[in-house]
Amino acid sequence: MPSQQSTSRLMGAMLLLHLTAGLILPFVLLRPLVSAQNFLLEGATISGQVTTAVLMLFVGSALPTAISCIALRPFRVYNSAAAYWLLALAVASFVLQAADNAHLLSMVTLSKAYAGAGAANTQAFQAAGVAVGALRKWSHYSFLLAVGCWILLFYGFLYRFRLVPRWLAAFGLVGAAGQIAGVTLRGFLGYPPESRLAMPLAPAYVALALWLIAKGLDLRHHATDLQPSPDATALGASSDRPL
Image 1 (cartoon, rainbow, N blue to C red):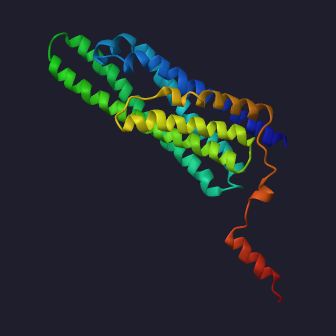
Image 2 (spheres, rainbow, N blue to C red):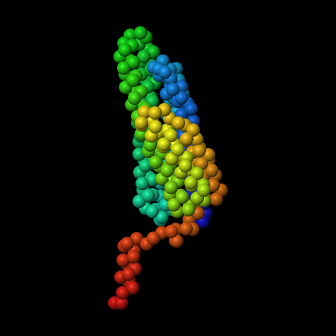
Image 3 (tube, one colour):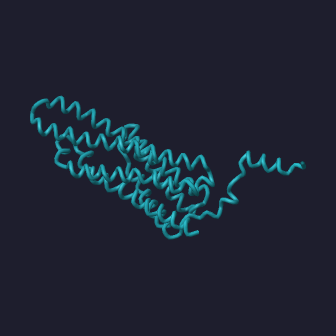
């Protein structure tokens, strides 16, 4: 159907935008801030760059919610609970990214105050810097966990109901699991991230997006995959009884 094809193309375009504006480019721009030995010295010099990255993160983190809303109607035909869980995880990831954005801007503000104060109250600024840096770190990992679970559920849904070729959905599942295990969980456990485990996620995103744009979702399997609900079964049984 044309409407289904248009929906699939819109989802594919949004996935490409989410990859670039939500998962890659902002973190490239933020690297000088978050990887600096002392962000108090660096933040004030790249405030415009950080602001640009934060604006991109607001847009990028809203895209999973938009994708989930678009997918809600076709997905809930297969599994209503999973479709709404997908939306809930998308909203949670947006909220957590908004908190992360506030901490990033707080780092820049603190850096500017530190630069303006000169040598005065250095110890107080260092202590505040440790606190703000810790808040940013844990809010960031919380966001990564939420968005990683969203990606995992999204690809899992596509795999379970064969809405795209299963090899394509499995590719995304491997990438999402690698991101969660190699980056997010290692961060929570106090280990440095192993970014190589998350590398398959980018080509998996691109492959899925291009497939949706070119081929769309395969919605032919729901008639055979869906099991009737208990209410529907009971209703059918009662209708078969003689009056």
